[in-house]
Image 1 (cartoon, helix red, strand yellow):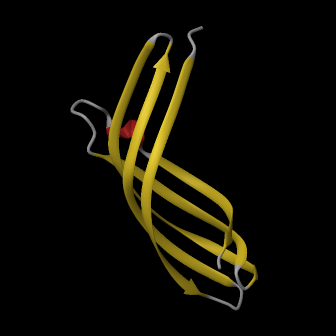
Image 2: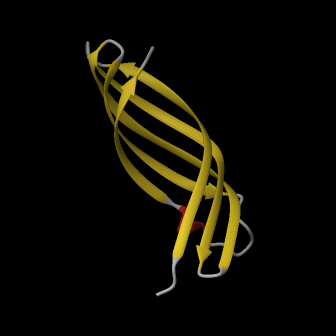
Image 3: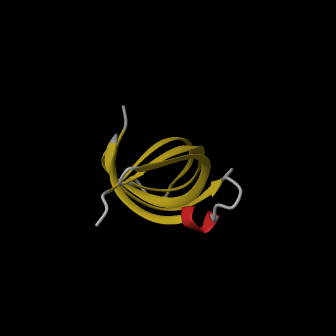
Length: 104
């Protein structure tokens, strides 16, 4: 088996739209656009590429205290600006994310 190593650097900006439902619950929509740099090492060969991504999604936040809570969101991610002949389907993804939000 040949060793394979992959690394990715992402710089993405996001915009969120929050709608307060109840005292501690918020729904939100989001969208973002950014830049991705990929590096892949397969044995002695190295391949790298740069493209842009855009994503959008929605989610739900539940606050335990006024400035911290848990969130769950679902995102669709798509690539743009790929090199000629690169299949954009390879860069489409759907993500379900769960995390903690803390605000100052």
